[in-house]
Length: 236
Ligand SMILES: Cc1cc2nc3c(=O)[nH]c(=O)nc-3n(C[C@H](O)[C@H](O)[C@H](O)COP(=O)(O)O)c2cc1C
Figure 1 (cartoon, helix red, strand yellow):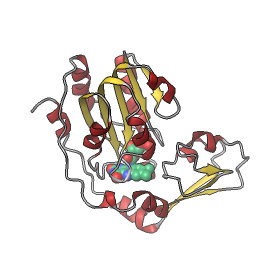
Figure 2 (cartoon, protein in one colour):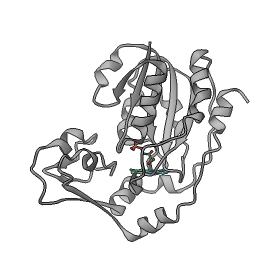
Figure 3 (tube, protein in one colour):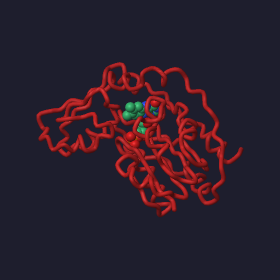
């Protein structure tokens, strides 16, 4: 049985996960809300999640080791800035054989870009799923930035503020993967995934960015991963 697991703040990774679910006619699960399903062993688990500050997002990291599966497919979406080394890192965490992996460039969470991606990149992954064979991923050079207080940097760069439109419906609390928001106010566990703002039915959470981050995003130098992991995964 093939299962798709995803973590998604603003829908980009969810769109990729939906693509796999449709293509493979597989069941799809939110990685932390449906954790109970992980007790049941899958033949193949496809795990889709975003790159956060060159790292694996905290809610994903804590769950990767808990998923029982014979084979794993690892897919990391990213906002075309940097990928860190998250595919290799996640391949070390899962308890099973990795049979394919890919970075998928998408819009950036903080630029409010649509959840679109080029599915061409994933065609070879679908083929690898048809004939499962273990692959070894290459360890990429990660750079220094991902190591420097990634969560603190996000918190300083992005502010989430409750406005008067808030009716305390608690949708933000229910959707927060970190249990970091209460009455529309975030605490220091917040990872700035923006799932709260995205799921607020009244649009009552205002997100603002500090000028340095705005400038960094505006001048973003597109970095499309060279997909060497896919190449590796095919044994090239
Ligand atoms: C906290 C945070 C950190 C991010 N860090 C990176 C990064 O290091 N490199 C990058 O290219 N994109 C980065 N992004 C953008 C996301 O990886 C990208 O937009 C992703 O597709 C979002 O997926 P989602 O909508 O499923 O959450 C970051 C986004 C957030 C919210």
